[in-house]
Image (cartoon, rainbow, N blue to C red; front, side, top):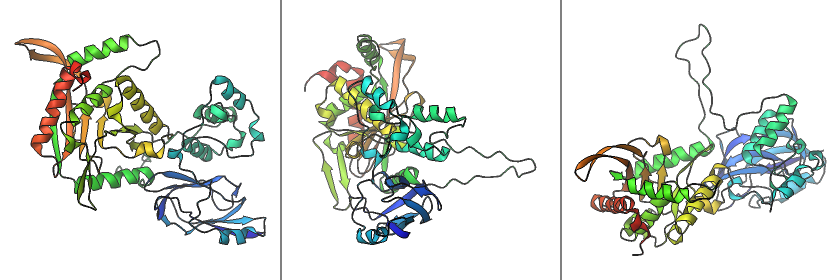
Length: 428
């Protein structure tokens, strides 16, 4: 027997420390090589860190929410091999083990048809000797439910375990699965307990990163908000016409692709809104290409996947790419480059959009366009009362670099395009 001291590896891209999000093991547990032992959060992504060797856990360092420097002791294992201790000392902290994975940076393997997936699903789960393919969320649920994923048959591509596979396995065992990222429930007050009883929830992981970035954006950026009402009756007519021509089962167009296409057109006249502010150098960087951020609510919190080169995409391609990157963000399959590099962001709460909102700028960008709820209401149209479909745009601008006049002029130009949607498609 020997001790193997595993230190937090260099996770790349200048990372000097990582936050512990959750341990998958505890002292006394036995782990296999390449089994995930802890999930950490860097400034770039959530990363699953696997055990480099097999052994029994002697100790772990840090609790969820703690920051651990690269090279610091993370976990101590008792191993069978006498050479393991020497190996642990020989591996430099900067050498990232190949099994350290960022789930947001790797997409699930694809197959050419259902047949290939079915073949993998029929393979005996107990025969698997390599790391089980599944999402971090499913792996977390399995750990919390006490399920060994090697015993679960996967029906996804290349035998990947999808949530329904875990649900089916747990149902056969007669145990309720742990809800995926379930929101903490308030603890009911016991009889005789004080009515003002509270529950404390530690802010860690992605939620901590969101809180930090939102705070920095509001503290450092003087937001200028501008709200304008749009008459989108003609846009709705065009949208319904195009959706009516789609084959059965095809994804319908929402308002967002039209907004994105109109925004691309308008930004040619207002390049100061398609820019980044480099605070370290004191420089405004204007971008010719439009890399469109699409604010997306996910089970883990708000993410902003990016449609790169949106200015080069026609309507249908733009709509498909917006759907693709948004779904990738929700399912934790988005690649790292799909979550970075946006030059301007659009955000929408859909049916919950309300009348107006004050979106927070996605730094280092200088503008964000918010979409509110569309509804029909009586308005004065061409001198008479008519029922028209209206919608508000609620936008925010960095007032240090975008003057109020220019912000208003840009939104007015955007309004003109959306109220007369044919103009969106006229080359100019």
